[in-house]
Amino acid sequence: SGKKIGYDYLVIATGPKLVFGAQGQEENSTSICTAEHSLETQKKLQKLYENPGPVVIGAIPGVSCFGPAYEFALMLHYELKKRGIRYKVPITFITSEPYVGHFGVGGIGPSKRFVEDLFAERNIDWIANVAVKAIEPDKVIYEDVNGSTHEVPASFTMFMPRFQGPEVVASAGDKVANPVNKMVVVNRCFQNPTYKNIFGVGVVTAIPPIEKTPIPTGGPKTGMMIEQMAIAVSHNIVNDIRNNPDRYAPSLSAICIADFGEDAGFFFADPVIPPRQRIITKKGKWARWFKSAFEKYFLWKVRSGNIAPSFEEKVLELFLKVRPIELCKDCEGAPGSRC
Image (cartoon, helix red, strand yellow):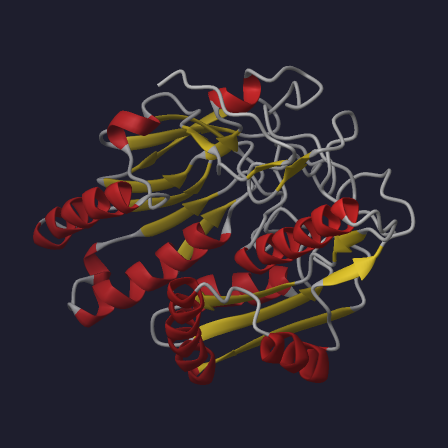
C-alpha cells in the first residue's frame, strides 16, 4: 500500500523467495514448497498413476532444503508400491550434493551410507554432484563436474528450488541484505551487525554454507532451528530494552523425522553446523508414529500461541541434553559459529 510504519525494533522473518533456477523448471516440473504448489503436484501425480512412466526427483544447484526431496522420493515409492504400479515407474534422484545424504551440512553421522542403503533397498537410482541445467516435458538435462551433459527420461519431475531473500529485503541495501542471496545479514545472535535494532529469523537469514562443494549447496534452516532463532532474538530484544547486557545465540540443534512411507528416519544433530556434540540416526516404524504425533503437537503449539512451552525445553534437556539458546559473550561472528 506504500504506507510507512516506524519501529523501535524490526524482526525480519518474511521467509524466502523461491528461485526456479533450471531452464523450464517452473513450467515443466513441480514443487512442494507452498500449499498451492503441493495441490498442483497432487494433480500431476494423479496423471502419473493413470499413465505410469519414469520419475525424476531432486535438487538444483544452490538448494539448501534437501530433506523434502528425499521424503518425496521415498513416499512416492511407497505409494506406487501400494497401487501395484511401482514396477512401471523407474525413479531417479538427482542432486547437487556431493553425495546423497549430505543434506547441505556435510552429512549427519553415517547418513551417506544410510541413504544409499535406503535407495538401494527401494530400487531408486541416484546421481549426485551434478548441476541440473534444464527440465523439459519428457527429460531432465544435467551437467557433471567435468562439464559433460547427460539426459534422463522423465514423465514426472519434482525439483526443490533454491531460496533467495524477497525483494523487500533486497531493497534495504547491502548492509541489511547479503549481496549474493539477498538474505538478512546477521551475527551469532541473529542481530544485524550494522543496524543493531534489526534482527533476522528463519529461512530469510544469511547463514553461510557449511562447506564449499563442487556444485553449490546451501545449509538448511529447519523448524527447530528457526524456533531457537526466535527465542534468542526475543530474549535479546527484551534485554536491550531493560539495559541488560546479556545476549543469547540459538544453539541451532535439530531433530528431523523423515517419512519414508512404510517407516521413517530419526536424525538428531547438536549443533547442525559441525563440529557436533552429539549425533543420532535411527530408522523404524516408531519414527513414523512419532512424526504423526509431533505434527498434532506442533499444530497445537501454533494454534494456542504457546510456541516454546517450558516442558518442551525440559524434555529436550533431559533426553537429548540440548537447550534452545546459549549465553553469548561475543555476538560478532558468523551465525552458527560458537560463542
